[in-house]
Image (cartoon, helix red, strand yellow):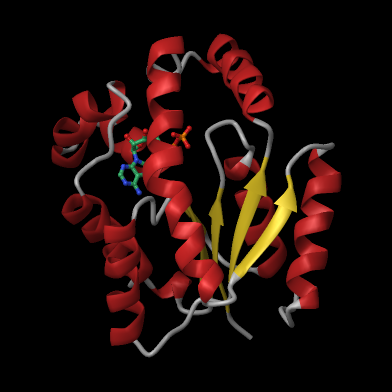
Length: 196
Ligand code: ADP
């Protein structure tokens, strides 16, 4: 049984937290491009040096850089039974890159989880997170910029995946456990099987 999943939602929707939980439930690695870039910046790797200023400004890292990072990660052995991608694809170019990669391996996505939260709720959550974690891209100005990129560039990918019948829309307001349960139930209804 494989599970190839994407989780898509605006900043502050809780997709990182839910992504880890869902990946664990289905026995696949959770792969977050944002986490990968932050680790690279922290470790001052060549990738980190390349993307630091872009991320701090709230802009998207160029597709060729991001897609190369994802391809390399998905080619590792632990992603053979599947994966949960958080934060990728983030625009239509990246959808094409992922399509080409999966096609070359004769693999298909099983579902795209859309986590919806009202705009004001996601802004409130980001402001709380800024106070707790001090992420350098969580200032009011950069948050607004990232949300507008989400609306203009990322939300349209849901139209493409929706046409393919892959989108599972989940209400992202509730307790962490309630939301995890909603996602698991919706994926089971699509024929996916959680691990033990
Ligand atoms: P958020 O969803 O709160 O923006 P992420 O951790 O997903 O947080 O991403 C943080 C930053 O990393 C983004 O603002 C962007 O600069 C960069 N990034 C992450 N994923 C991608 C991607 N798929 N394409 C381009 N840039 C990305």
